[in-house]
Amino acid sequence: MGRKYIDCRDFPSVAKCTVAISADSEKELLEIAVQHAVAVHGHKDSPEFRAQLKQAFKDGMPKA
Image (spheres, rainbow, N blue to C red):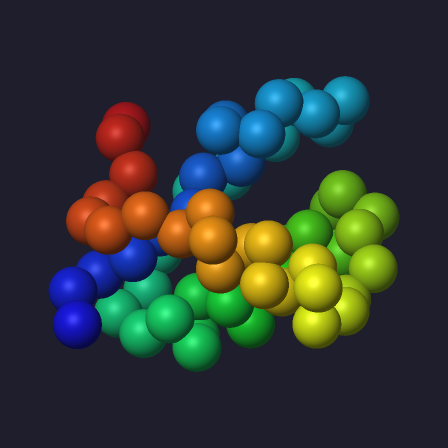
């Protein structure tokens, strides 16, 4: 499996977050993305939310 990422810039918010997170494993990416979303954006950790995050993962590396 190649590198995957999720980029907050793809989801504009009140926080105007510019964080992009990448990892070699989907499991690792999901865990840190959930931690970030809960701590910074106030989301609730749930199976449904985790599924939504996984659908937003992209292959490769975020743009600079």
